[in-house]
Structures are given as C-alpha cells and as structure tokens.
Image (cartoon, rainbow, N blue to C red; front, side, top):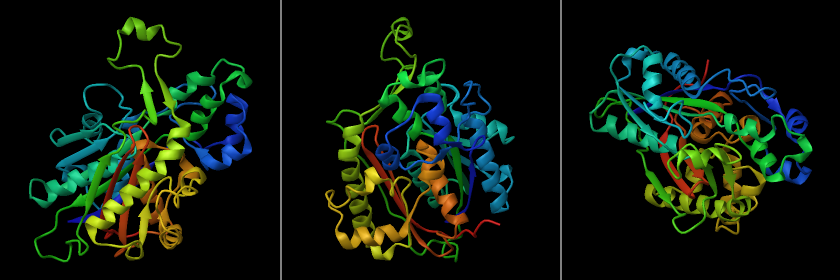
Length: 361
C-alpha cells in the first residue's frame, strides 16, 4: 500500500498579525511569540465576516490537487474518508458534498468528527480498508473552517474592548484543507511499505476539563436557551490547562507510537507535528519526559507550518505534510511519523509510514 500524493488548499490571502491587531486589539509580545502564528487564512473576509469559501469547497480543491499529483481521476477513488469539526451542515456528512463536487455518483464515504487528530485517524482507517482488499484507492481529506466562529468576537466592537482570551483565540486559528491519496499495492510488490505501519490513538482527558470546546449549535440545551447566549456558537479555550498538559499528551503519544513500532527518534526522518515548534509547547518537552538527546533529535526532524497557517484542526497534519514535501523535508523513502495532538479532550493520534510519493512539481 502506497501513500501517493498530497494536496492543500488555503482560502484567500494571508492575514497577518498587524491586521488582527487593528480589528481586535493587540496581544502582549511574549504571548504572540508563544503562539508562534504570523499568518493565517480564513474563509471569511476579516473586515466584514462575509464568506468566500466553505469547508467542502476547500476540501474539494485540496482533493483535486492531490488526485492530479497522483495522476488519477476522481472516478478512480472508491473510498473517501473525511475529517472535520466544522462541516457545512450537521447532515448530510461533509464528505458526501465533496463526493458530489468531484462528480462521483457512487463512492464509499466515511466521516470522522474530530479536530487535529481526525486526519491521522482517517488515514489509518483508509489504509486498513486498502490493506484488507475492501477498496483499491482512497482519498483522505482533513478540512476546517474556524473563522466563522471568530468574526463575532470583534465585528462591530471597539478592538480594545475585546477580551484578551478572545483575542488569543482569534490570533491562533486558521482555515484550510489537506488531502492524501493512498492506493493498495499488489501483494509482495515494491509498492508495499517496507516500514509497515504503526498506529496509536488515545484520549487522556476523561477526567479533565476540556482544553478546547466549541459551545452552541448542538443539543446541550434547548435552542431557545442557546439563542439567549451572547454568541450562538463560540470557542472556549483553557489556556493554562493546554499549556500544562498538552506537552504531556505529546510525550505520551510519542512514546506509545515508538514503542509499538520498535523505532527510536533517531530512526525517524521526519516527524510531522503541526504545533511542535510553538514555544508554549516545545519549552515543556523536558518536563513532559522527553530527554535532552531526544529533544535535540526532534528539533531536527519536526515538520510543521504553524507560523504560516495557524492552528487548523483536521487540516493541520495533511497541510504540514504537504508543506514538508514541498520544502524537501519529506522525500521518497523517508520514514515518517505523523503525530497529532488535540486539546479538546487531550487526544493524540500517531501513524508511522514510509513516504513513497514524489515531490511536488
């Protein structure tokens, strides 16, 4: 089974921190440095909140690019697995709209409702379906539209009256979509992955307050009660909690994947970890149990693009993988570890693979 290609879609022009400072007020310099985001892309116009794209629109664009790079047509796909926490509609599943936009009357569609860990979980599901012969060619897409929840924080308000915790949310998140194409190989052929695959996922937050929660638009309360809230939907972050416990989740996930795979950090050519170099994250590695030698080795192999795209939920890992391939950080034959950390309930998902697709042309 081969990982053939990736595709990415970032909506609109990049939005810099100067623009956000004008719209919702400044962040302290140390906080801005800590989150590490310089630009992000939104499906909305930051000045007006008007939408110019959608989750499924971005997902379809990323999918088409991945298929083009793989030399395939949409009709070659018989399994589509999508992850998102921000679908266009509660139902039907967002993946079915991507199927429709790709012109497929029939296709197996599975959807994972998750944030950052979702794309890795979706990749593992797809590769298992290919490995057992159920399907031949799979398209995996992670897409997220977070900006529609951010605009109500500042639109029509004095920027200096926006709460600091709300500003932090606005500065942190971006929208985007990433896609990966996988194809089953003939048994014993050169297309089989010599590394094999190891997958690990776990939720460590069963007894903890959520690190991130999207409140509203669900069934937690009567709709009439929800309408009386200040905002119909909003993102709530436990900033101290994520800063303290997030690195512990990373360390646990890394150790789990390495133990299951029999690999060491030195055996890995690229660790795709979208937030791995954020200061608030990496400065806690040692206290989380990552030794000095492994920490030093990780700094050389971490592949991430947080500064350019922000925190993008389900899109984070495929976007970082795509950027790593474009930059030559992930090359054919590389042993790659995909590791996603999600603050919502402190989840991790990791997958090892050998990258076999070509670089971007």
